[in-house]
Length: 353
Ligand SMILES: Cc1ncc(COP(=O)(O)O)c(C=O)c1O
Image 1 (cartoon, protein in one colour):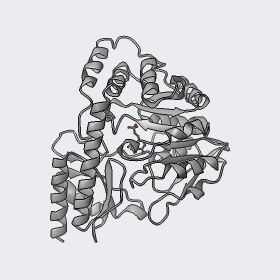
Image 2: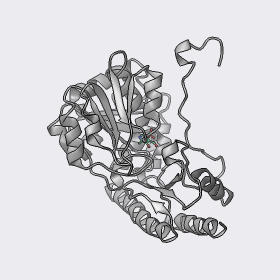
Image 3: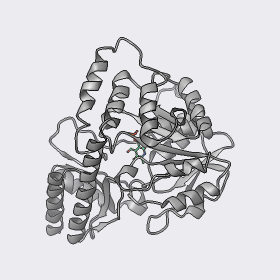
Image 4: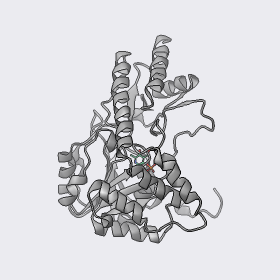
């Protein structure tokens, strides 16, 4: 830390992203990317824009917003796009929280919520999940703080039903309720239909997982047009060209190929179900996931040891040291071949105990 850092950031603990190894020697199951490349038209679309990089990108992202609006049956004014959904979360904490306005979210969830809370000086009410790692909607009946729920939750993969999300919205009419649907395409129930009923709902999505564009950095959010305008105000006060030309074109091209999207997402869901059964067959505890990852604990082996043992066998997974979940590792669902290797490695680790 330099002597110039403002004292309000002295205690800030930044988010730690999963490891991105330089080579491709590892089987990479640690950051929930899709194991398949982007849709076939994406590279050509991005390349066309690469020829025009001397020009700024469209700060309104009109084509991309129109494509998203058509895909999800909403008006373009209800769509916000951003440099990864992380940036949307950041803008939402900036726009809707701060002095006198707090946020509420679970103790075990996406780690960035806590970081944004700390960054923007937000009073965060962190509610423990139930013993079985499910969210109790009644914990969010406060009504005076922005509610942030990842659905499916990360790193558990567990879901709330649409009725439970509606229940949370009904009890919070005067604050934004942000539902982070980064993983919803892998089997969760989207809150989008509730937009007709609730003007305080923001549904945050990403192209990083189900649309294979993690490296492109593209997130979007759908909600009431007034809430979207608030996010635009923050964006145009921060970085109007937050989405480069290539990423905007890549997003449009990805949306133009629904068949590829369905095929790759379907493959991941099938692989997930198969891998979950095999891991359970080996004696692992596997939470019922609706995401593109499995949250897994091996009998009698702490999660940190599982992480190290898999790494020694060339497989990267993710471990979180929070006490309630330190026995688990989060395993991204890869290709069937990668999951074969993962299951073999798990069997070997258990055999050597
Ligand atoms: C629950 C959740 N929300 C948001 C994100 C951020 O995704 P991105 O910024 O790549 O869109 C992640 C990334 O892993 C996530 O797990």
